[in-house]
Length: 420
Image 1 (tube, rainbow, N blue to C red):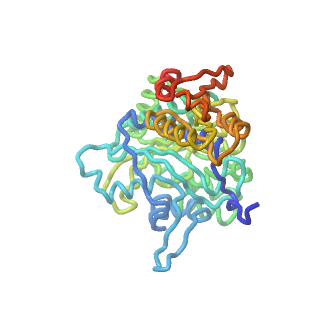
Image 2 (cartoon, rainbow, N blue to C red):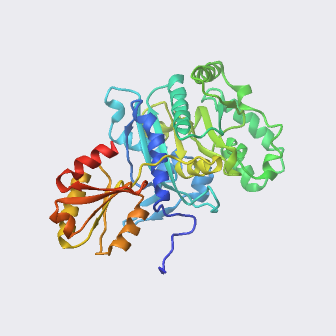
Image 3 (tube, rainbow, N blue to C red):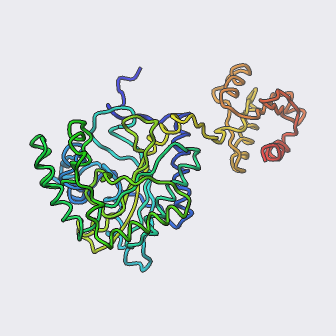
């Protein structure tokens, strides 16, 4: 046993389960790559102020959950708790918005970190795939991203997820609602921290998961009743475009999500098979975030989908992904000459795109065939001195058990033909 263990609230991805995570990432990314989104990757840590300004100083993420530290040089950094602020910072720094082709459409995949109470579906280190469309205010972009996420989930075989949709208004209508909500919250029996949060950003209180708070919010004013005409029209067009695409959704007037930068469209993907941690992803429009972090006005929209949560959703529905075999051919040499010949053939098979492995360590036939079985290979190549003297190897079909002699120089072509 190792002396060390993975830190509390984290997990290791190891074979064979890691193959499912890779397949989920690929499935989420595939519709994005097919829709003009280019890949972007940012550092695992950023300046603390980037998240304090962008995510919001009143959010739980910044006040309670962010891993912040000071470097030896005195810089205040934080492990990234989410992806949008980092991606927008990178886009601004590289002047992607000045290239003349807006919106800038990018997708990303990586690990994120939040100090939370560990439980199933909520980790301190977690994986997400995200997408951002930067620099355009268009209901069609909002709809596009929701449709692409729906497409990704359905390509994985998921069906029991729901899309919740709301509008958070903009700088014209939200201040009126903010005042009405603050007046309402001041009349409730809330603790000092929650009341203080209500003064900074009252929408955060609506996102409070504590039952003692939620049961008092039944009569809270709803933002949809305060939307200006422009926000109403914008939201209605998003709804119409999603509906026309055949994507079902539910209007949720209390949906606010946990980040301060959202404006207008906000949405969440939930799976009821996951218990209390039902959200598998979400996002929305963040038209003012660029200015918050020192950039120009760049209306934008994006989402992030949790890879770990999506894997749990697949398990909840009993969906087993069809994963490609890690090994199609396994070579078993018997003797030094066979070891040299078969190693060369394995190398040739790999160059031709066939997944092949080799019996290392000089095992005997019985031990090597056990390894071949464990590898999941469809075919095994076996060769000893007598086979090579005859210019052949033995090709065994691991499903039928049938074994045939094939010429050494023909084995690669034979396997290419059999494996298609």
